[in-house]
Length: 160
Image (cartoon, rainbow, N blue to C red; front, side, top):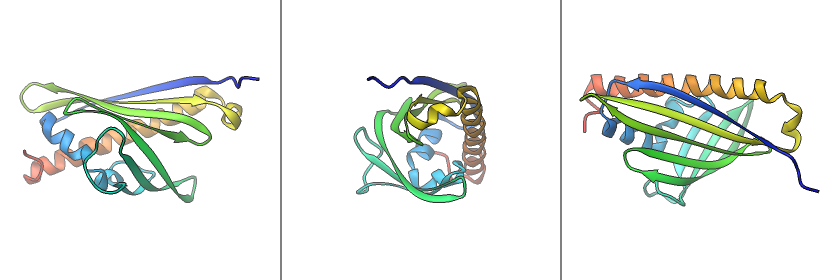
């Protein structure tokens, strides 16, 4: 018997007052992900090295009051335009990524997308409620990214 699942998708968009190269460099520094991702406590690329397809991003995270470890596989890196990852959310397969487009001479349009194939026990949770929660977290993360990158630029630390 084949298990049924449905896929939900969210998209969050912001404009960052920084060059695409500055935004890209910030997001490739996975050690700084805890600055903008509310569930990430620590983050690193397994074995060191750059953010590259096939690499694993290991995290120490905190969800619902519980500390745990999780890993995501890097599935795409198209510098400085896009990055994507695959892993799990609860008991479901999940994918997420970011896309970047220059805006004018010193701005970047950034979009974060998240897809979750709702399966197994997660099917008991209403899909619309899960989608709304993912959207809220993504919007919060994008606000955090913008704040961190723009603070670096103002401090002179984010200019390539």
